Amino acid sequence: MSHFDEAGAAVQAALDAGARYADARVMVCRTESMTARNGAVEDLGSDESAGLGVRALVGSSWGFYAVPDLSEPSARAAGRRAAQIAAASAQVAGPPVELVPSAPVVASWASDCKVDPLSVPLSDKGDLLVRATTVAKEAGADLAQAHYAVWDTHKWFVSSEGHRIDQHIRECGGGVTATAIGEGEVQRRSLPGQYGTRGWELVDELDLVGNAAQMAEQARALLTAPLCPAGETSLILGGSQLALQIHESVGHAIELDRILGWEAAFAGTSWLDLSKLGALRYGSDLMNITIDPTFPGALGSFGFDDEGTPAVKRHAVKDGIWVGVLAGRDSAAVAGLDYAGSVRSDGWSRLPMVRMTNVGLEPGPHTLDEIIAATDDGVFMDVNRSWSIDDRRLNFQFGCEIGYEVKNGKRGRMLRNPTYTGIGPKFWASMDMLSSETIAWGTPNCGKGQPGQVGHTGHPAAPARFTNVRVGVQG
Image (cartoon, rainbow, N blue to C red):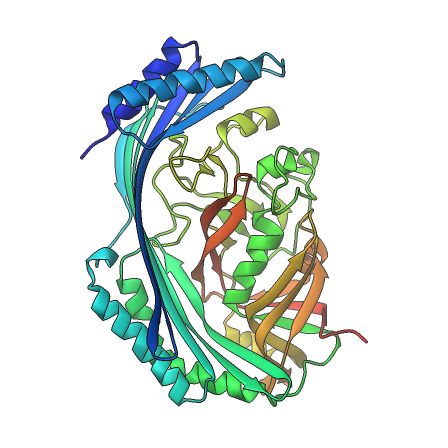
């Protein structure tokens, strides 16, 4: 069922009430999630919501209004109300809001999906999680958990410039975690939770049951493994941990609203200075970061953002130089840029804002085996356990679930409680080897804004080596 009529009615009502630009999104969202613990289903949730959100631009100000009623009278009332809010805000004069061009299109887009996640019987999903946790318990875990989550979103977007776009985005993912408890010590090993804009085939490929025993065995082994030594050394990060490193120290920092000082909630502002765009060295020559919502199957993929701008791949960092940002049409105009394309909301009742899409590293020339073979003395770490970064996205500390000593080109003994710390540009400048074994890791819980919004982001990443990094707890 199409909802273009309701969205169009809201836009026209906003224009009739004095808006010089308006757009509206109707969204119908279904979610489902399940968690199992120690061989039994512990939690099952499902939800469905539908509504319309409309933005109106009057003078220097935006107005936004949302309603859960998809009737045309309600849509028209929402459009009028959004224009009234914008007009009231515009009484406090500010710089006129301009929008970078977005060619109006009539289009339809859907994410690739071989097996509809919502069509898989709940009993089959529950059996999968129960089996995974049972296997982990039998292999030595004191606490075994497994989970999955599904999001099914239909969008209908209409703008006063002529956009008319519908999208159907299906996302899912899951993971399994084993916890071992010892004398004054608790250790956890997780199959990195993976999520994407794909069908249930993604969860099948994770092989939760097949990986559960190894997670339990490693968690148990970590209880007696030696602590990660402290000092400066070569650090090799697995792809899952590097994805989080990108998310925290690059993705949030290149959000244009943070750079402009428009946004500081949850993740702070940014250390980047727009006057240095195109000239600032962010990292080594191996650092090529792309903003790519076209990446097949990644969690930050879409056909069009929530302003109707088509998905386009572009560089944020090229050969180590900062060259691009995540932008919306209004922030891009303020910054003097000619592109946008990174605006989304987490539902019909939230104002769209600048969000990460798929922000990740282009593949390097090496393999993980080559990186280890080329390392005389170092530490390999993977899968995040804790993180901390300052409110300018500059100074950070990360703890990982597991580490391994690397000596004379070989991976050696397991290390417990591995941590590392650094400063963004100095850390990225030390990257001297990068694998080609890229996976687009999904992050389904990125928080931003007030009221808070949860964003789904993707981070293509592969194992990489960094030199002279501080690891371990310094005495």
